[in-house]
Length: 380
Ligand code: DGJ
Image 1 (cartoon, rainbow, N blue to C red):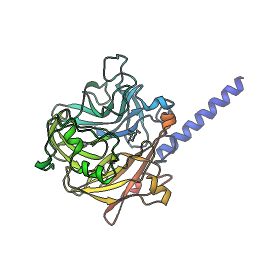
Image 2: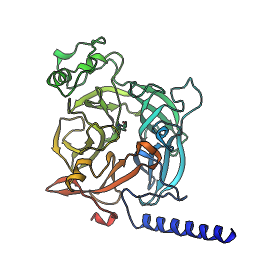
Image 3: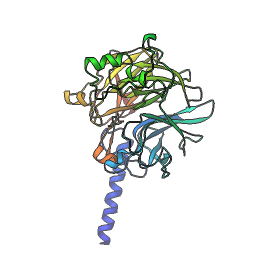
Image 4: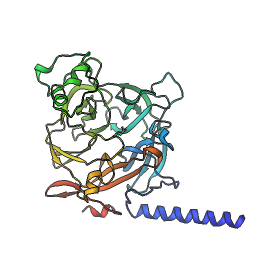
């Protein structure tokens, strides 16, 4: 028995050392990714904040089984100096037992992103928030703040943003609020559905109560202005919304982007003055081909550039079996960006894998290629 115990401990420690060695030598997309405690990183739908020479990775903490698709714990945070070895910094935002709180255990928290507000010296987290027992109906965006990057974050509110404001690129002729508009069962891809969308059906319906906000990201521009970018209008159109100077509210200035094109999972980066977005289509937890778009201004107009994947047909069809969540600018390297995607495993949510790939440029266009293993030396 003693002998068996010793050999199992030895085996475990060798595999840990091996796994950690693998991590320090680079990225191995899709493989288990162990943190400093030897546990697979638990930060899905995540985003990265670089602060004080350290990267912080915030993401959804999942538990085992299908239950893990709900928020049973909260938002997990890890830190790293080199993007490959991550230290567990604990739970940044916790769900609560209090059933009167919107943040009650069993609600849905997805795609948390954190940005730092220099003026207020506050870390600001926004996340897609759905209410317990209501599926994806509420389409809220939640706000939590902290003076310390790793938290604990204090939950502030969840809202449907931009209530009482029309999109900046909405023609005057469409500006008729109509909360009673109801077209149950509409096929949004049909000509009739597309017409309704083009005429801003959801924007008009939700004008007074605020717009729907599901898959989201945050982007801070060089001038310090921050934008909350989310799938709105029943996931049919993206909204690019400006945040107030403290990043804790919406200014009401927002644009509709790629109307009726059904984009989810927006991830943005800026290179040589141009904004690029990788997003996905809407197929639930299943992957689909990524979409690349470009703009001269963050709030658009955005132009579609097609599929950025350069793999086999099967790889392109599934974006290397992943869905975008964030694009990381690599510090200290020029024009170095990492695509950060999730390989979802909804039947056992905790086992979701991370697909991080270098963004390469071909003919000036960002593209993705598969690597079983790669490291930062790929960037010049
Ligand atoms: C796709 C989204 O991108 C995910 O964040 C999640 O909301 C799933 N849909 C749920 O089906």
